[in-house]
Image (cartoon, rainbow, N blue to C red; front, side):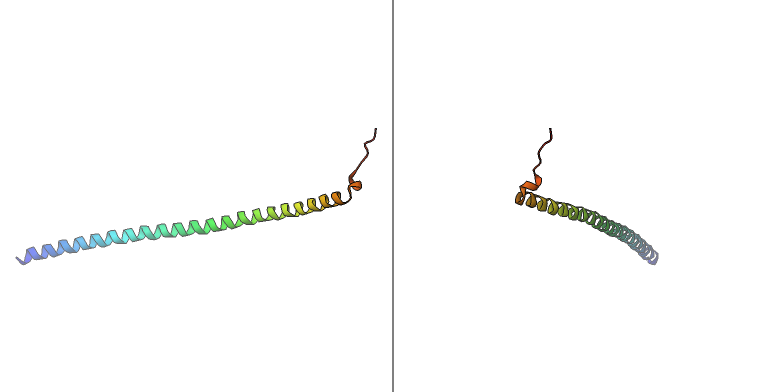
Length: 89
Protein backbone atom coordinates (compact mmCIF):
# COMPACT_ATOMS: atom_id res chain seq x y z
CA UNK A 1 0.00 0.00 0.00
CA UNK A 2 2.83 2.39 0.79
CA UNK A 3 4.25 1.73 -2.62
CA UNK A 4 1.05 2.89 -4.40
CA UNK A 5 1.16 6.17 -2.48
CA UNK A 6 4.78 6.68 -3.50
CA UNK A 7 3.92 6.23 -7.16
CA UNK A 8 1.05 8.68 -6.85
CA UNK A 9 3.35 11.24 -5.24
CA UNK A 10 5.93 10.69 -7.98
CA UNK A 11 3.28 11.21 -10.65
CA UNK A 12 2.05 14.36 -8.91
CA UNK A 13 5.61 15.69 -8.67
CA UNK A 14 6.15 14.86 -12.35
CA UNK A 15 2.97 16.70 -13.30
CA UNK A 16 3.98 19.70 -11.18
CA UNK A 17 7.46 19.77 -12.73
CA UNK A 18 5.97 19.58 -16.25
CA UNK A 19 3.52 22.38 -15.46
CA UNK A 20 6.34 24.49 -13.97
CA UNK A 21 8.47 23.90 -17.07
CA UNK A 22 5.60 24.94 -19.36
CA UNK A 23 4.97 28.08 -17.27
CA UNK A 24 8.65 29.05 -17.42
CA UNK A 25 8.72 28.48 -21.17
CA UNK A 26 5.59 30.61 -21.59
CA UNK A 27 7.09 33.40 -19.47
CA UNK A 28 10.28 33.19 -21.50
CA UNK A 29 8.33 33.64 -24.75
CA UNK A 30 6.39 36.56 -23.30
CA UNK A 31 9.61 38.21 -22.10
CA UNK A 32 11.24 37.78 -25.49
CA UNK A 33 8.24 39.27 -27.28
CA UNK A 34 8.08 42.22 -24.87
CA UNK A 35 11.79 42.84 -25.52
CA UNK A 36 11.22 42.70 -29.28
CA UNK A 37 8.30 45.10 -29.01
CA UNK A 38 10.37 47.51 -26.91
CA UNK A 39 13.22 47.41 -29.45
CA UNK A 40 10.76 48.03 -32.28
CA UNK A 41 9.28 51.02 -30.46
CA UNK A 42 12.73 52.50 -29.85
CA UNK A 43 13.62 52.10 -33.53
CA UNK A 44 10.26 53.52 -34.58
CA UNK A 45 10.76 56.55 -32.32
CA UNK A 46 14.25 57.21 -33.71
CA UNK A 47 13.07 56.88 -37.31
CA UNK A 48 10.05 59.08 -36.71
CA UNK A 49 12.13 61.79 -35.03
CA UNK A 50 14.61 61.76 -37.93
CA UNK A 51 11.85 62.01 -40.54
CA UNK A 52 10.04 64.77 -38.63
CA UNK A 53 13.28 66.74 -38.33
CA UNK A 54 13.80 66.45 -42.08
CA UNK A 55 10.24 67.57 -42.78
CA UNK A 56 10.65 70.46 -40.35
CA UNK A 57 13.75 71.65 -42.22
CA UNK A 58 11.88 71.49 -45.53
CA UNK A 59 8.94 73.37 -44.04
CA UNK A 60 11.27 76.08 -42.69
CA UNK A 61 12.78 76.47 -46.17
CA UNK A 62 9.34 76.75 -47.75
CA UNK A 63 8.24 79.30 -45.15
CA UNK A 64 11.31 81.46 -45.88
CA UNK A 65 10.64 81.27 -49.63
CA UNK A 66 7.01 82.21 -49.07
CA UNK A 67 8.03 85.20 -46.96
CA UNK A 68 10.39 86.32 -49.71
CA UNK A 69 7.65 85.99 -52.32
CA UNK A 70 5.24 87.93 -50.12
CA UNK A 71 7.76 90.75 -49.84
CA UNK A 72 8.32 90.71 -53.60
CA UNK A 73 4.57 90.80 -54.30
CA UNK A 74 4.12 93.61 -51.76
CA UNK A 75 6.92 95.56 -53.40
CA UNK A 76 5.45 94.96 -56.86
CA UNK A 77 2.03 96.11 -55.68
CA UNK A 78 3.41 99.24 -54.04
CA UNK A 79 5.71 100.15 -56.96
CA UNK A 80 4.27 98.71 -60.17
CA UNK A 81 6.51 100.96 -62.28
CA UNK A 82 9.54 98.96 -61.12
CA UNK A 83 8.16 95.85 -62.74
CA UNK A 84 6.89 97.25 -66.04
CA UNK A 85 8.93 96.71 -69.05
CA UNK A 86 8.50 97.80 -72.59
CA UNK A 87 9.07 95.05 -75.05
CA UNK A 88 11.66 95.93 -77.61
CA UNK A 89 10.78 95.50 -81.22
